[in-house]
Length: 404
Image (cartoon, rainbow, N blue to C red; front, side, top):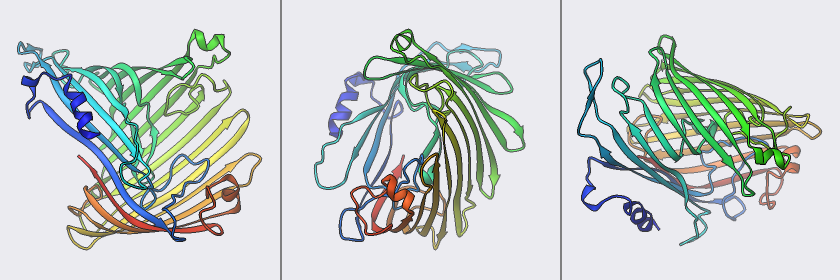
């Protein structure tokens, strides 16, 4: 499978142009194995209605993203702007295939998905070294909370755009993001962002306005909802070697999911408000950690649902190579007309890694996870297949994680 992936990519690259300085390999993977306390296969715990789950010792699938970037063309005739710095127009191909499998046995079927498949043109204008244009499918300027794998601002998919035009006080980006379904219905999200706004010492602000536009075909079949959303993310650096990231998001109509793309089947009165905060302490000492908060209030078809999530992953480093991670997470979902749902999860994981850094990868882990939930969560289907007796469960196993 992997050989086929690279062979496919190399079809687009002339043989004599392949060189170490123009081609890079990048990716991400997590893989592991585990069992449940009753002797069955490892089960993972996610509260129905929650946008994420605390992931340490709580990921049942094998997953990999394998990417390749290759410089297709560089103009030898450099342009010189007012700054006197030469710029060389460059075209770069970015490709990435993602693979997921259940991890039950050898040689499992896995359908690859193109997560990145786009061409980027950089150094377009003199005095704009960070500006670029792109067309294709890509991860687009994503924001997430790592410990619960929650991408709260993520418009990944097909599109085209201009990135990082320097206005002096900030950089502006625009993306044209179509979103189609299997029946041919489509809408467009116009994504406008201002990034790297210096609002305080060591603090940067990114603000975005998204406008959803339903197509004529949507209107003809009764799905004619556009929408709008505002997104703001403030990152404060220099906090005990780490940072604090706070976000506020509001979406309406087709952009009720404020951090995503327009959904023309939504109702015009649908709304959502979301607040997130995550703190990383990472000073290279004995202790590192991440703590997170998510609060979301969504109203769809006049029915309100709130999601509250609190969690943390402190790590104690015995040495540069050996550490112990403990992750605790609490999720609560309160839907209109139904019982409140609660999930409590704790994982203990000794780790072998490369340094005293929270982000140190690759890492090998052993883990034991305990989770408990209430009757509302049980009724909503948290224990699919009734894997556990009662409203709690234990899983254990091993995991490897890396990015490069």
